Image 1 (cartoon, rainbow, N blue to C red):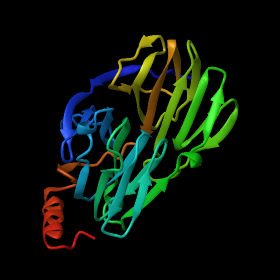
Image 2: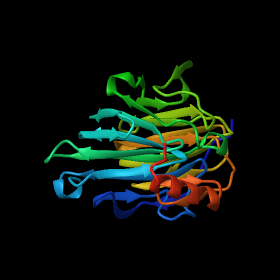
Image 3: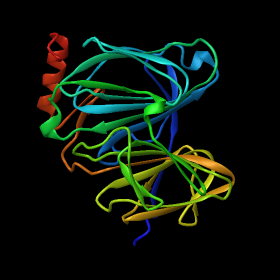
Length: 280
């Protein structure tokens, strides 16, 4: 087996989005900073209501998927298709914008911690205009797997752990996404196989950890090199980190704000459809 090692480190930059929500953005801080098939990765976390209370009022999307993982807090999703869902502690919202969706994500709390991540996952050209879809995944629907050195929340994809195969709350798709929230105990170790065809990154958000002996940076997208396995070790106080992987699409990307297509002409069509009320 060939161990994955660190290829590139992309420190998250502080910025704001929506109506002024404070975030840290790693992937997507510019259109050149991506990892196929992923377009953007945001971390949010604050106990100050002023950092999140304005939320994300109604806005459009076309051509990709958004995955919101709420570690702590309460947001309400509503869209023009009539979908409505509460995103609470430990839950995930998996939204396929497809040919078009107009939605809002608004806080349902005015105090306390709101903490989590949003990931943008690209769609191949053949799927960019498919019907929009939405899935509200409750915390109890996400498998939690334990091993000697810690635990894993298996949000998406499949993995082999303790010589057994496991499937996440979300499976399939042309990009075969893998999304794990890994908790390492103090000095805990984890070795996992990972399909060599998938691009992969780690995102450390608590504690300290090492990959194949190299220290991981906090609040940074750590892109991994080629290989078919990885080995993690937690620091003296343990760690929490995300493992995100997917099969690259290898197609042109043209992005204009919330629209991600394959050509400028398709972007112009998306803008016209939005303007004329034909986004869906």
